[in-house]
Image (cartoon, rainbow, N blue to C red; front, side, top):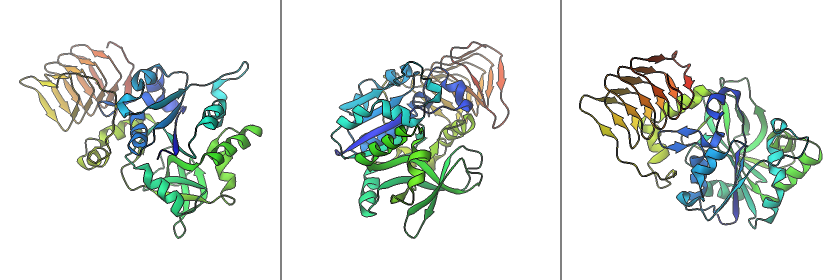
Length: 366
């Protein structure tokens, strides 16, 4: 896919995730013990042979920049970080994705690739994008949007596609629908670069800000907008609850195998640390334990990132503990998300309601 430029949109905002995005962008939210959310989209692009990738970022991008570096961990030669460009009198809070794209239109125009693959940074999946490109040509499409059949989107802020299954053509798009079932849009679009630039220009000239709502939906009858069905595991992080549930889903073997046990590895920043150490008397059940952890207590149905220390007599259950967390002796953590470098003192109990996890802010001592 040397004729395809990859565009990753990391400009989303969500009040429901503000506890995790206070100091970082969506793409740099830790996930699954050793990854960041952006690793999935970035790895899928790299594995598919896309070598020229631009990432549109927010202001809070220091953590993302540190994670990505030069892109060598993804075997990339051309990785570009495209921060927001704000002119006097403009307010970043009023920006839509079209604003971010248009501010770097020169980057897109100067690229030599003929096609664009646009994807968000907050989605969990493993997909060979060559399949999407082949479908684009086979279906004579102007635009391809990737979707997945789902049973329930009622409690999530998503976009559903209304697909004519006989032709695979998209006949309607519902943003944050009220219905509980549908064809979930996977935040992946493939099209010719010329059309992508044309849609951006159309929106900018009319003061429109949303690429899908303002650029694509009004043209569903004009353009041949086709739907490619993805059958693997898929999730998108938009709320604290689905972030928690998607992490916990990795504890299921079927989910883990679909994401990680195949020929297309999910890559991340390499950090050399010793293996986890399990001290006599520990108990670990159905959990992901990253390198550098020291486990003296109990860890049940939980995910521990690199360098977490679980001291004697403590219990971690149905929780997520991010990098370098310290859980003191006889402490109890249940249904809770601990951000990086949180220290829980001896005998402290933090128990969140079931399915309503709370977040302990990074570097907090409790």
